[in-house]
Length: 558
Image (tube, rainbow, N blue to C red; front, side):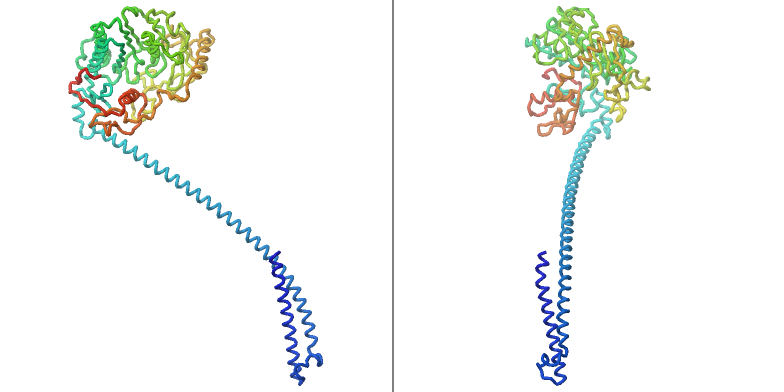
Protein backbone atom coordinates (compact mmCIF):
# COMPACT_ATOMS: atom_id res chain seq x y z
CA UNK A 1 0.00 0.00 0.00
CA UNK A 2 2.79 2.41 0.75
CA UNK A 3 4.30 1.72 -2.67
CA UNK A 4 0.98 2.54 -4.37
CA UNK A 5 0.56 5.74 -2.36
CA UNK A 6 4.04 6.89 -3.08
CA UNK A 7 3.60 6.28 -6.78
CA UNK A 8 0.19 7.96 -7.08
CA UNK A 9 1.37 11.65 -6.96
CA UNK A 10 4.04 10.96 -9.54
CA UNK A 11 1.45 9.41 -11.87
CA UNK A 12 -0.90 12.38 -11.52
CA UNK A 13 1.97 14.79 -12.15
CA UNK A 14 2.93 12.98 -15.34
CA UNK A 15 -0.70 13.14 -16.56
CA UNK A 16 -0.89 16.90 -15.94
CA UNK A 17 2.40 17.45 -17.70
CA UNK A 18 1.21 15.40 -20.68
CA UNK A 19 -2.08 17.41 -20.80
CA UNK A 20 -0.22 20.77 -20.79
CA UNK A 21 2.12 19.45 -23.45
CA UNK A 22 -0.85 18.45 -25.65
CA UNK A 23 -2.47 21.93 -25.22
CA UNK A 24 0.75 23.70 -26.09
CA UNK A 25 1.11 21.58 -29.18
CA UNK A 26 -2.43 22.41 -30.33
CA UNK A 27 -1.83 26.17 -29.82
CA UNK A 28 1.37 26.06 -31.76
CA UNK A 29 -0.41 24.28 -34.60
CA UNK A 30 -3.19 26.91 -34.75
CA UNK A 31 -0.66 29.74 -34.79
CA UNK A 32 1.21 28.23 -37.62
CA UNK A 33 -2.00 27.70 -39.61
CA UNK A 34 -3.13 31.31 -39.13
CA UNK A 35 0.24 32.64 -40.16
CA UNK A 36 0.02 30.63 -43.31
CA UNK A 37 -3.38 32.29 -44.11
CA UNK A 38 -1.95 35.81 -43.60
CA UNK A 39 -3.28 36.44 -40.10
CA UNK A 40 -1.05 38.17 -37.62
CA UNK A 41 0.84 36.13 -35.23
CA UNK A 42 -0.80 35.87 -31.82
CA UNK A 43 -4.37 36.41 -33.16
CA UNK A 44 -5.14 32.77 -33.55
CA UNK A 45 -7.22 32.69 -30.40
CA UNK A 46 -9.57 35.54 -31.44
CA UNK A 47 -9.77 34.65 -35.08
CA UNK A 48 -12.03 32.13 -36.65
CA UNK A 49 -11.85 29.05 -34.60
CA UNK A 50 -9.72 27.01 -36.88
CA UNK A 51 -8.39 24.17 -34.77
CA UNK A 52 -9.89 25.59 -31.57
CA UNK A 53 -12.13 22.53 -31.05
CA UNK A 54 -9.11 20.28 -31.22
CA UNK A 55 -7.69 21.62 -27.95
CA UNK A 56 -10.93 20.94 -26.05
CA UNK A 57 -11.13 17.46 -27.40
CA UNK A 58 -7.51 16.75 -26.44
CA UNK A 59 -8.13 17.80 -22.84
CA UNK A 60 -10.97 15.32 -22.49
CA UNK A 61 -8.84 12.56 -23.97
CA UNK A 62 -6.00 13.47 -21.69
CA UNK A 63 -8.29 13.22 -18.67
CA UNK A 64 -9.60 9.89 -19.84
CA UNK A 65 -6.11 8.68 -20.53
CA UNK A 66 -5.13 9.85 -17.07
CA UNK A 67 -7.89 7.77 -15.50
CA UNK A 68 -6.93 4.71 -17.52
CA UNK A 69 -3.27 5.10 -16.73
CA UNK A 70 -4.05 5.64 -13.04
CA UNK A 71 -6.03 2.39 -12.98
CA UNK A 72 -3.23 0.62 -14.79
CA UNK A 73 -0.72 1.96 -12.29
CA UNK A 74 -2.82 0.67 -9.38
CA UNK A 75 -2.97 -2.78 -10.93
CA UNK A 76 0.74 -2.66 -11.63
CA UNK A 77 1.38 -1.68 -8.04
CA UNK A 78 -0.69 -4.57 -6.71
CA UNK A 79 1.09 -6.98 -9.05
CA UNK A 80 4.40 -5.65 -7.87
CA UNK A 81 3.37 -6.12 -4.22
CA UNK A 82 2.24 -9.70 -4.87
CA UNK A 83 5.39 -10.36 -6.81
CA UNK A 84 7.49 -8.91 -4.00
CA UNK A 85 5.67 -11.01 -1.43
CA UNK A 86 6.16 -14.15 -3.50
CA UNK A 87 9.79 -13.25 -3.96
CA UNK A 88 10.22 -12.83 -0.21
CA UNK A 89 8.52 -16.17 0.44
CA UNK A 90 10.73 -17.85 -2.17
CA UNK A 91 13.85 -16.27 -0.68
CA UNK A 92 12.77 -17.41 2.78
CA UNK A 93 12.27 -20.97 1.50
CA UNK A 94 15.63 -20.88 -0.19
CA UNK A 95 17.28 -19.64 2.98
CA UNK A 96 15.61 -22.36 5.06
CA UNK A 97 16.59 -24.99 2.52
CA UNK A 98 20.13 -23.74 2.48
CA UNK A 99 20.23 -23.74 6.29
CA UNK A 100 18.98 -27.33 6.42
CA UNK A 101 21.43 -28.36 3.76
CA UNK A 102 24.24 -26.65 5.65
CA UNK A 103 23.29 -28.41 8.89
CA UNK A 104 23.02 -31.77 7.13
CA UNK A 105 26.37 -31.20 5.46
CA UNK A 106 28.01 -30.30 8.77
CA UNK A 107 26.48 -33.35 10.53
CA UNK A 108 27.52 -35.59 7.66
CA UNK A 109 31.03 -34.20 7.84
CA UNK A 110 31.15 -34.80 11.59
CA UNK A 111 30.03 -38.40 11.10
CA UNK A 112 32.63 -38.86 8.41
CA UNK A 113 35.30 -37.47 10.70
CA UNK A 114 34.13 -39.75 13.52
CA UNK A 115 34.17 -42.81 11.25
CA UNK A 116 37.54 -41.80 9.87
CA UNK A 117 38.94 -41.44 13.41
CA UNK A 118 37.39 -44.78 14.44
CA UNK A 119 38.96 -46.51 11.42
CA UNK A 120 42.30 -44.96 12.26
CA UNK A 121 42.07 -46.13 15.86
CA UNK A 122 41.07 -49.65 14.77
CA UNK A 123 43.91 -49.76 12.28
CA UNK A 124 46.29 -48.67 15.00
CA UNK A 125 44.93 -51.29 17.40
CA UNK A 126 45.19 -53.98 14.73
CA UNK A 127 48.70 -52.89 13.97
CA UNK A 128 49.66 -53.06 17.63
CA UNK A 129 48.06 -56.49 18.03
CA UNK A 130 49.66 -57.69 14.85
CA UNK A 131 53.05 -56.45 15.97
CA UNK A 132 52.52 -58.06 19.36
CA UNK A 133 51.53 -61.38 17.83
CA UNK A 134 54.36 -61.16 15.31
CA UNK A 135 56.92 -60.59 18.08
CA UNK A 136 55.45 -63.40 20.15
CA UNK A 137 55.37 -65.71 17.12
CA UNK A 138 58.95 -64.88 16.22
CA UNK A 139 60.11 -65.64 19.74
CA UNK A 140 57.97 -68.78 19.82
CA UNK A 141 59.46 -70.04 16.56
CA UNK A 142 62.94 -69.31 17.87
CA UNK A 143 62.42 -70.97 21.24
CA UNK A 144 60.69 -74.01 19.77
CA UNK A 145 63.48 -74.50 17.31
CA UNK A 146 61.20 -74.19 14.28
CA UNK A 147 63.45 -71.78 12.45
CA UNK A 148 66.49 -73.87 11.78
CA UNK A 149 66.94 -74.59 15.47
CA UNK A 150 65.26 -77.97 15.70
CA UNK A 151 68.55 -79.56 16.67
CA UNK A 152 68.83 -77.20 19.63
CA UNK A 153 65.25 -78.00 20.69
CA UNK A 154 65.91 -81.75 20.43
CA UNK A 155 69.07 -81.39 22.47
CA UNK A 156 67.19 -79.41 25.10
CA UNK A 157 64.42 -82.03 25.28
CA UNK A 158 66.94 -84.85 25.41
CA UNK A 159 68.49 -83.19 28.45
CA UNK A 160 65.10 -83.14 30.17
CA UNK A 161 64.32 -79.45 29.72
CA UNK A 162 61.08 -78.01 28.38
CA UNK A 163 61.28 -77.39 24.65
CA UNK A 164 59.41 -74.12 25.01
CA UNK A 165 61.41 -71.68 27.11
CA UNK A 166 58.92 -68.84 26.73
CA UNK A 167 56.44 -69.85 29.37
CA UNK A 168 57.87 -73.07 30.79
CA UNK A 169 59.81 -71.63 33.69
CA UNK A 170 60.06 -72.63 37.34
CA UNK A 171 59.45 -69.92 39.90
CA UNK A 172 60.15 -69.91 43.63
CA UNK A 173 58.21 -67.08 45.24
CA UNK A 174 59.33 -64.06 43.22
CA UNK A 175 62.47 -65.58 41.74
CA UNK A 176 62.79 -67.57 38.55
CA UNK A 177 65.04 -70.51 39.30
CA UNK A 178 64.74 -72.30 35.95
CA UNK A 179 63.94 -71.09 32.49
CA UNK A 180 63.36 -73.34 30.68
CA UNK A 181 62.25 -75.69 33.44
CA UNK A 182 64.08 -78.98 33.78
CA UNK A 183 61.07 -81.28 33.49
CA UNK A 184 62.65 -84.66 34.21
CA UNK A 185 64.11 -83.27 37.42
CA UNK A 186 61.06 -81.20 38.35
CA UNK A 187 59.62 -83.65 40.89
CA UNK A 188 63.00 -83.89 42.61
CA UNK A 189 63.23 -80.09 42.77
CA UNK A 190 59.70 -79.71 44.19
CA UNK A 191 60.28 -82.41 46.82
CA UNK A 192 63.62 -80.89 47.89
CA UNK A 193 62.00 -77.49 48.27
CA UNK A 194 59.05 -78.89 50.26
CA UNK A 195 61.29 -80.90 52.58
CA UNK A 196 63.47 -77.87 53.26
CA UNK A 197 60.37 -75.78 53.98
CA UNK A 198 59.06 -78.38 56.46
CA UNK A 199 62.37 -78.64 58.29
CA UNK A 200 62.81 -74.86 58.53
CA UNK A 201 59.20 -74.34 59.66
CA UNK A 202 59.37 -77.01 62.38
CA UNK A 203 62.69 -75.62 63.60
CA UNK A 204 61.12 -72.16 63.96
CA UNK A 205 58.37 -73.59 66.24
CA UNK A 206 55.78 -71.46 64.44
CA UNK A 207 52.55 -72.66 62.81
CA UNK A 208 53.00 -73.44 59.13
CA UNK A 209 51.02 -74.46 56.06
CA UNK A 210 52.31 -76.22 52.94
CA UNK A 211 50.26 -76.62 49.77
CA UNK A 212 52.10 -79.19 47.67
CA UNK A 213 50.44 -79.10 44.24
CA UNK A 214 51.99 -82.02 42.41
CA UNK A 215 51.91 -82.02 38.62
CA UNK A 216 51.29 -85.79 38.49
CA UNK A 217 49.37 -87.50 36.99
CA UNK A 218 48.22 -84.66 34.73
CA UNK A 219 49.21 -84.74 31.10
CA UNK A 220 51.76 -84.33 29.64
CA UNK A 221 53.14 -87.47 31.35
CA UNK A 222 56.82 -87.38 32.27
CA UNK A 223 59.00 -88.67 35.08
CA UNK A 224 62.61 -89.18 36.05
CA UNK A 225 64.16 -92.20 34.30
CA UNK A 226 64.79 -93.97 37.60
CA UNK A 227 61.03 -94.52 38.01
CA UNK A 228 60.56 -96.50 34.85
CA UNK A 229 60.21 -98.55 33.00
CA UNK A 230 60.46 -101.22 35.65
CA UNK A 231 59.09 -104.58 36.69
CA UNK A 232 55.28 -104.94 36.97
CA UNK A 233 53.96 -103.48 40.18
CA UNK A 234 50.87 -101.95 41.76
CA UNK A 235 51.12 -98.88 39.52
CA UNK A 236 51.57 -100.61 36.18
CA UNK A 237 48.73 -100.20 33.66
CA UNK A 238 48.08 -100.59 29.97
CA UNK A 239 50.20 -97.49 29.55
CA UNK A 240 53.62 -97.98 31.11
CA UNK A 241 54.19 -94.20 31.13
CA UNK A 242 51.16 -93.63 33.37
CA UNK A 243 52.40 -96.30 35.74
CA UNK A 244 55.80 -94.62 35.91
CA UNK A 245 54.21 -91.27 36.73
CA UNK A 246 52.17 -92.84 39.52
CA UNK A 247 55.31 -94.49 40.88
CA UNK A 248 57.08 -91.11 41.04
CA UNK A 249 54.02 -89.51 42.70
CA UNK A 250 53.97 -92.23 45.34
CA UNK A 251 57.65 -91.64 46.02
CA UNK A 252 57.07 -87.86 46.47
CA UNK A 253 54.27 -88.36 49.01
CA UNK A 254 56.39 -90.87 50.89
CA UNK A 255 59.29 -88.41 51.06
CA UNK A 256 57.08 -85.73 52.66
CA UNK A 257 55.57 -88.12 55.23
CA UNK A 258 59.00 -89.48 56.08
CA UNK A 259 60.27 -85.94 56.63
CA UNK A 260 57.43 -85.28 59.10
CA UNK A 261 58.40 -88.42 60.98
CA UNK A 262 62.10 -87.49 60.98
CA UNK A 263 61.50 -84.03 62.47
CA UNK A 264 59.02 -85.37 65.01
CA UNK A 265 56.07 -83.39 63.58
CA UNK A 266 53.81 -86.23 62.44
CA UNK A 267 51.51 -86.07 65.49
CA UNK A 268 51.21 -82.28 65.14
CA UNK A 269 50.46 -82.23 61.41
CA UNK A 270 47.21 -82.72 59.50
CA UNK A 271 47.94 -84.23 56.07
CA UNK A 272 45.23 -84.26 53.38
CA UNK A 273 45.84 -86.06 50.09
CA UNK A 274 43.23 -85.56 47.35
CA UNK A 275 42.69 -84.55 43.73
CA UNK A 276 40.85 -81.77 41.96
CA UNK A 277 38.80 -83.79 39.45
CA UNK A 278 38.21 -87.15 37.87
CA UNK A 279 40.19 -88.64 34.96
CA UNK A 280 40.81 -86.60 31.83
CA UNK A 281 39.01 -88.99 29.47
CA UNK A 282 39.43 -86.83 26.39
CA UNK A 283 43.20 -87.39 26.48
CA UNK A 284 42.58 -91.08 25.87
CA UNK A 285 42.63 -94.00 28.27
CA UNK A 286 46.38 -94.44 27.79
CA UNK A 287 46.89 -90.96 29.27
CA UNK A 288 44.33 -90.96 32.11
CA UNK A 289 43.25 -92.85 35.18
CA UNK A 290 40.18 -95.00 35.77
CA UNK A 291 36.83 -94.10 37.34
CA UNK A 292 35.61 -97.51 38.54
CA UNK A 293 32.26 -97.36 36.78
CA UNK A 294 31.37 -93.78 37.67
CA UNK A 295 29.62 -91.74 34.97
CA UNK A 296 31.39 -88.89 33.19
CA UNK A 297 34.84 -87.53 33.89
CA UNK A 298 36.88 -84.36 34.29
CA UNK A 299 34.98 -81.18 33.48
CA UNK A 300 31.59 -82.79 34.18
CA UNK A 301 29.28 -82.82 37.20
CA UNK A 302 28.52 -86.52 37.08
CA UNK A 303 30.21 -88.40 39.90
CA UNK A 304 33.03 -89.45 37.58
CA UNK A 305 34.06 -85.81 37.32
CA UNK A 306 33.75 -84.71 40.95
CA UNK A 307 34.14 -87.79 43.16
CA UNK A 308 37.86 -88.22 43.85
CA UNK A 309 39.97 -90.12 46.40
CA UNK A 310 40.74 -88.46 49.72
CA UNK A 311 43.15 -89.69 52.41
CA UNK A 312 43.61 -87.93 55.74
CA UNK A 313 46.41 -88.62 58.24
CA UNK A 314 46.81 -87.18 61.72
CA UNK A 315 48.10 -89.74 64.20
CA UNK A 316 46.18 -89.58 67.48
CA UNK A 317 43.44 -87.35 66.04
CA UNK A 318 42.07 -88.98 62.88
CA UNK A 319 41.34 -92.71 63.45
CA UNK A 320 43.51 -94.81 61.15
CA UNK A 321 41.78 -97.21 58.78
CA UNK A 322 38.33 -95.57 58.97
CA UNK A 323 36.43 -95.35 55.67
CA UNK A 324 33.39 -93.23 54.82
CA UNK A 325 31.44 -92.29 51.70
CA UNK A 326 29.83 -89.28 53.37
CA UNK A 327 30.25 -86.09 51.33
CA UNK A 328 33.33 -83.93 51.94
CA UNK A 329 34.04 -81.20 49.39
CA UNK A 330 37.23 -79.32 48.58
CA UNK A 331 35.50 -76.11 49.68
CA UNK A 332 35.34 -77.65 53.18
CA UNK A 333 39.12 -77.55 53.60
CA UNK A 334 39.37 -73.87 54.51
CA UNK A 335 36.78 -73.83 57.34
CA UNK A 336 38.02 -77.23 58.55
CA UNK A 337 41.66 -76.16 58.79
CA UNK A 338 40.61 -72.87 60.40
CA UNK A 339 38.70 -74.82 63.06
CA UNK A 340 41.67 -77.09 63.80
CA UNK A 341 43.90 -74.00 64.03
CA UNK A 342 41.52 -72.32 66.46
CA UNK A 343 40.72 -69.48 64.06
CA UNK A 344 37.22 -68.03 64.16
CA UNK A 345 35.95 -66.95 60.77
CA UNK A 346 34.00 -63.67 60.58
CA UNK A 347 30.31 -64.46 61.26
CA UNK A 348 29.24 -62.04 58.53
CA UNK A 349 31.25 -63.92 55.89
CA UNK A 350 29.27 -66.33 53.71
CA UNK A 351 31.19 -69.62 53.64
CA UNK A 352 30.33 -72.10 50.89
CA UNK A 353 31.99 -75.03 52.66
CA UNK A 354 31.31 -76.56 56.08
CA UNK A 355 33.54 -77.35 59.05
CA UNK A 356 34.41 -81.06 58.89
CA UNK A 357 36.86 -81.09 61.81
CA UNK A 358 34.48 -83.13 64.02
CA UNK A 359 33.75 -85.55 61.18
CA UNK A 360 37.46 -86.24 60.61
CA UNK A 361 37.82 -87.15 64.27
CA UNK A 362 34.59 -89.18 64.31
CA UNK A 363 33.84 -90.19 60.70
CA UNK A 364 30.13 -91.00 60.99
CA UNK A 365 27.11 -89.49 59.21
CA UNK A 366 25.96 -87.89 62.44
CA UNK A 367 29.14 -85.77 62.54
CA UNK A 368 29.32 -84.97 58.84
CA UNK A 369 28.93 -81.25 58.19
CA UNK A 370 26.60 -81.69 55.21
CA UNK A 371 24.48 -84.59 56.42
CA UNK A 372 24.05 -83.27 59.98
CA UNK A 373 23.09 -79.75 58.93
CA UNK A 374 20.95 -80.64 55.93
CA UNK A 375 22.59 -77.89 53.91
CA UNK A 376 22.39 -78.00 50.13
CA UNK A 377 25.64 -77.86 48.16
CA UNK A 378 25.68 -76.56 44.61
CA UNK A 379 27.55 -77.72 41.53
CA UNK A 380 28.54 -75.03 39.04
CA UNK A 381 29.14 -75.60 35.35
CA UNK A 382 30.90 -72.41 34.35
CA UNK A 383 28.60 -69.67 35.65
CA UNK A 384 25.51 -71.92 35.72
CA UNK A 385 24.30 -73.92 38.71
CA UNK A 386 23.08 -77.07 37.00
CA UNK A 387 23.10 -79.55 39.92
CA UNK A 388 22.92 -79.72 43.70
CA UNK A 389 23.18 -82.28 46.47
CA UNK A 390 20.82 -82.56 49.43
CA UNK A 391 21.84 -85.21 51.98
CA UNK A 392 22.43 -88.34 49.88
CA UNK A 393 20.34 -87.15 46.93
CA UNK A 394 21.70 -85.37 43.86
CA UNK A 395 19.46 -83.14 41.68
CA UNK A 396 20.24 -82.22 38.06
CA UNK A 397 18.35 -79.29 36.58
CA UNK A 398 20.50 -79.51 33.47
CA UNK A 399 23.12 -81.90 32.12
CA UNK A 400 26.07 -81.59 29.76
CA UNK A 401 25.72 -83.02 26.27
CA UNK A 402 28.25 -85.69 25.32
CA UNK A 403 29.72 -85.97 21.83
CA UNK A 404 29.20 -89.12 19.82
CA UNK A 405 31.59 -90.60 17.31
CA UNK A 406 34.73 -90.55 19.47
CA UNK A 407 34.31 -93.90 21.17
CA UNK A 408 37.79 -94.86 20.04
CA UNK A 409 39.13 -92.13 22.36
CA UNK A 410 36.60 -92.15 25.19
CA UNK A 411 32.92 -92.46 26.03
CA UNK A 412 30.76 -90.01 27.96
CA UNK A 413 33.09 -87.21 26.89
CA UNK A 414 33.56 -84.23 24.57
CA UNK A 415 36.92 -84.43 22.76
CA UNK A 416 36.17 -81.66 20.24
CA UNK A 417 33.62 -79.45 21.98
CA UNK A 418 35.48 -76.27 22.76
CA UNK A 419 36.81 -73.16 21.09
CA UNK A 420 40.42 -74.32 21.07
CA UNK A 421 39.42 -77.57 19.39
CA UNK A 422 38.02 -75.63 16.47
CA UNK A 423 41.20 -73.59 16.15
CA UNK A 424 43.93 -76.12 16.80
CA UNK A 425 42.23 -79.52 16.92
CA UNK A 426 43.32 -79.79 20.54
CA UNK A 427 41.73 -81.81 23.31
CA UNK A 428 38.91 -80.13 25.18
CA UNK A 429 36.30 -80.87 27.84
CA UNK A 430 32.51 -80.76 27.85
CA UNK A 431 31.43 -77.15 27.74
CA UNK A 432 28.94 -75.13 29.81
CA UNK A 433 27.40 -72.77 27.25
CA UNK A 434 23.74 -72.97 26.29
CA UNK A 435 24.41 -75.13 23.25
CA UNK A 436 26.25 -77.69 25.37
CA UNK A 437 23.57 -78.09 28.04
CA UNK A 438 20.39 -80.16 27.96
CA UNK A 439 17.33 -79.41 30.10
CA UNK A 440 15.17 -82.43 30.95
CA UNK A 441 11.41 -82.09 31.24
CA UNK A 442 11.75 -82.74 34.99
CA UNK A 443 14.90 -82.59 37.13
CA UNK A 444 16.95 -85.79 37.14
CA UNK A 445 17.38 -87.08 40.68
CA UNK A 446 19.74 -89.84 41.86
CA UNK A 447 20.36 -91.48 45.22
CA UNK A 448 24.15 -91.27 45.00
CA UNK A 449 24.65 -92.99 48.37
CA UNK A 450 23.10 -96.17 46.97
CA UNK A 451 23.60 -95.49 43.24
CA UNK A 452 26.98 -93.74 42.91
CA UNK A 453 27.16 -94.64 39.20
CA UNK A 454 23.96 -92.61 38.60
CA UNK A 455 22.34 -95.29 36.49
CA UNK A 456 18.75 -95.22 37.84
CA UNK A 457 16.94 -91.88 38.27
CA UNK A 458 14.36 -91.72 41.03
CA UNK A 459 10.73 -91.53 39.84
CA UNK A 460 9.28 -88.04 40.15
CA UNK A 461 6.51 -89.38 42.37
CA UNK A 462 8.93 -90.75 44.98
CA UNK A 463 8.99 -88.96 48.32
CA UNK A 464 12.77 -88.64 48.22
CA UNK A 465 12.49 -87.02 44.77
CA UNK A 466 9.92 -84.44 45.85
CA UNK A 467 11.71 -83.58 49.09
CA UNK A 468 15.11 -83.19 47.44
CA UNK A 469 13.83 -81.06 44.54
CA UNK A 470 11.93 -78.73 46.87
CA UNK A 471 14.88 -78.32 49.25
CA UNK A 472 17.39 -77.79 46.43
CA UNK A 473 15.18 -75.30 44.57
CA UNK A 474 14.55 -73.21 47.69
CA UNK A 475 18.24 -73.23 48.61
CA UNK A 476 19.19 -72.20 45.06
CA UNK A 477 16.91 -69.17 45.22
CA UNK A 478 18.50 -68.10 48.51
CA UNK A 479 21.97 -68.71 47.10
CA UNK A 480 21.34 -66.54 44.06
CA UNK A 481 19.93 -63.78 46.24
CA UNK A 482 23.17 -63.76 48.24
CA UNK A 483 25.41 -63.23 45.22
CA UNK A 484 26.93 -59.81 44.65
CA UNK A 485 26.34 -58.84 41.01
CA UNK A 486 29.26 -56.40 41.11
CA UNK A 487 31.83 -59.10 41.90
CA UNK A 488 33.12 -60.89 38.78
CA UNK A 489 33.31 -64.65 38.78
CA UNK A 490 36.76 -66.07 39.44
CA UNK A 491 36.56 -68.17 36.27
CA UNK A 492 35.96 -65.16 34.03
CA UNK A 493 38.94 -63.82 32.04
CA UNK A 494 40.22 -60.57 33.48
CA UNK A 495 42.35 -57.95 31.70
CA UNK A 496 45.61 -58.76 33.46
CA UNK A 497 48.64 -57.46 31.54
CA UNK A 498 51.35 -59.95 30.76
CA UNK A 499 53.93 -57.64 32.30
CA UNK A 500 52.94 -59.15 35.67
CA UNK A 501 54.65 -62.35 34.53
CA UNK A 502 58.18 -63.04 35.71
CA UNK A 503 60.94 -63.18 33.19
CA UNK A 504 64.52 -64.00 32.41
CA UNK A 505 66.70 -62.18 29.92
CA UNK A 506 66.89 -63.78 26.51
CA UNK A 507 63.42 -65.34 26.52
CA UNK A 508 59.83 -64.20 26.54
CA UNK A 509 58.70 -62.51 28.78
CA UNK A 510 61.67 -60.22 29.33
CA UNK A 511 62.74 -57.53 31.80
CA UNK A 512 62.59 -53.93 30.62
CA UNK A 513 62.66 -50.87 32.87
CA UNK A 514 61.84 -52.84 36.01
CA UNK A 515 58.75 -54.34 34.37
CA UNK A 516 58.26 -57.74 32.85
CA UNK A 517 56.71 -59.00 29.67
CA UNK A 518 54.64 -57.20 27.11
CA UNK A 519 51.20 -55.65 27.01
CA UNK A 520 49.15 -58.76 26.30
CA UNK A 521 46.12 -60.07 28.13
CA UNK A 522 45.85 -63.23 30.14
CA UNK A 523 43.26 -65.24 32.05
CA UNK A 524 42.92 -64.34 35.71
CA UNK A 525 43.57 -67.77 37.20
CA UNK A 526 47.13 -67.85 35.86
CA UNK A 527 48.18 -64.58 37.43
CA UNK A 528 46.57 -64.26 40.86
CA UNK A 529 49.60 -65.59 42.74
CA UNK A 530 52.02 -63.62 40.60
CA UNK A 531 50.08 -60.43 41.23
CA UNK A 532 50.25 -61.15 44.95
CA UNK A 533 54.03 -61.49 44.72
CA UNK A 534 54.27 -58.22 42.80
CA UNK A 535 52.11 -56.48 45.43
CA UNK A 536 54.49 -57.64 48.15
CA UNK A 537 57.59 -56.66 46.22
CA UNK A 538 56.34 -53.34 44.91
CA UNK A 539 58.07 -52.40 41.68
CA UNK A 540 61.30 -54.27 42.23
CA UNK A 541 63.23 -55.77 39.36
CA UNK A 542 62.61 -59.28 38.14
CA UNK A 543 65.09 -61.77 39.54
CA UNK A 544 66.59 -64.57 37.51
CA UNK A 545 68.68 -67.46 38.78
CA UNK A 546 69.58 -70.09 36.22
CA UNK A 547 70.18 -73.59 37.48
CA UNK A 548 72.74 -76.13 36.26
CA UNK A 549 71.75 -78.74 33.73
CA UNK A 550 71.02 -81.36 36.38
CA UNK A 551 68.13 -79.21 37.67
CA UNK A 552 69.60 -78.90 41.18
CA UNK A 553 68.82 -75.36 42.26
CA UNK A 554 69.53 -75.98 45.91
CA UNK A 555 67.09 -75.69 48.78
CA UNK A 556 67.39 -72.06 49.80
CA UNK A 557 64.70 -70.79 47.47
CA UNK A 558 62.63 -69.03 50.12
